[in-house]
Length: 117
Image 1 (tube, rainbow, N blue to C red):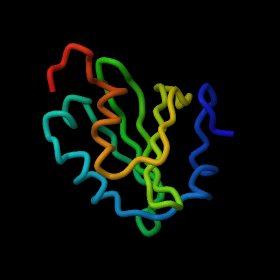
Image 2: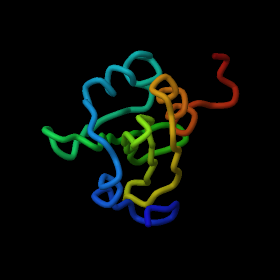
Image 3: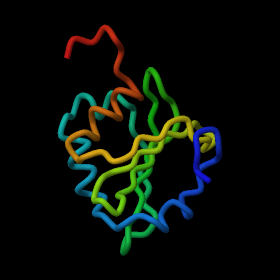
């Protein structure tokens, strides 16, 4: 049931999530322009424009190539699922505050140990 190593079932995940505005999440992600675009982010998808419970985008970073799924859980915190190109879950990070999203995603997708910031 949506664990690392399994194919993501986002319809199952969204049953326990709450709606959010994907444009607000994109503003948060784009708040650090250079980091966000270093991920090679493309193909942005939402599940339903009236009741959005999922934002997905493709990344082509140095450490992770695949998809990033963002959900908002019942505690008003974000859950982020990283999948490979075949939608197999490679990492799950739960209960993130909005100001942690960029840093946590960058840590898994792009950031190298020799970066100085």
